[in-house]
Length: 356
Image 1: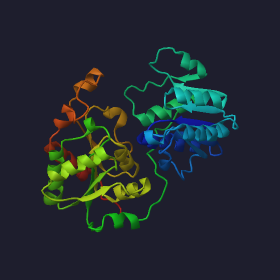
Image 2: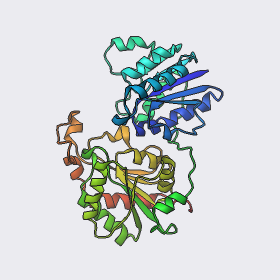
Image 3: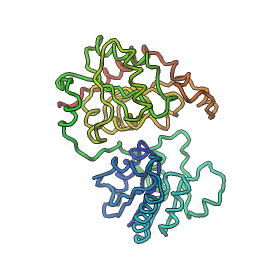
Image 4: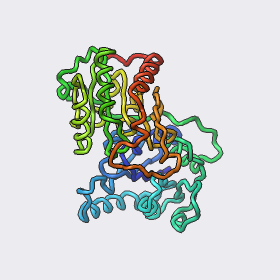
């Protein structure tokens, strides 16, 4: 059997597809399973034994988008998909580009989830429409049940498994970038930033939380962020509100190394980001702060976690009306006291991490 998965989304979405890939490999151990992702997302699937071939296309970075790169990517893509004659091809992106790739693949069955969608000419590019009702389902479940409704109809399925990072990472570069951390003592990782400002919490609240972790609990704190300028600016603002200084980690680690760092921590705290999903892949306890994102869809999957969701008018109305250039009022309404209480409750309910 030959299966094609097209997932032209972002980093977090790529990681959220790993339970579906694992389930496909378990059910069809000899199948060829090829995956098409956006350029930049492949690092989350490299060395994953559940897939056979990985193709990158359509970079997430606007600076990498040009005719030369596009022609090279499409040449590689067509060389892969046109030769295979897939039995099944799935659009898990719900995008025009994904549907075109499925059409070009000439797969015997070309499928997507069309639940709650009006009939469209684009659906005519496909020949199988799944109807799994995903409105309040997690994204992991949407991927999983969409695929298996088509590929194994009528089968009683186990629930989707956990997120998976297959690459190993040693500690040498992690320790080199964090020389002040005592690895024999507990530490928490805080990842407070997102490329979307409206998802972020107030900097002064993060400062209060860092002080509580370091002074009240006696823990070390690692403040993590991506390398983007908007995230670096937010980190500087948070540091200005810190009474005690945390260790800083701003880029520099690969995804497997970040996963190893998160997995050894006692607690991960952050907003709705790829880093939160990466922490979930190593089953570290997570306190996640949600505002406009639907926590039922994007909550940490497959790990002990606590959710704190501010009351969001935009989410209730299904239309964002707040100023996207700053944290939304729903995020600002979350208090440090709420986060502290949820963190303590979660810690009492979960075991300590494995030895380093």
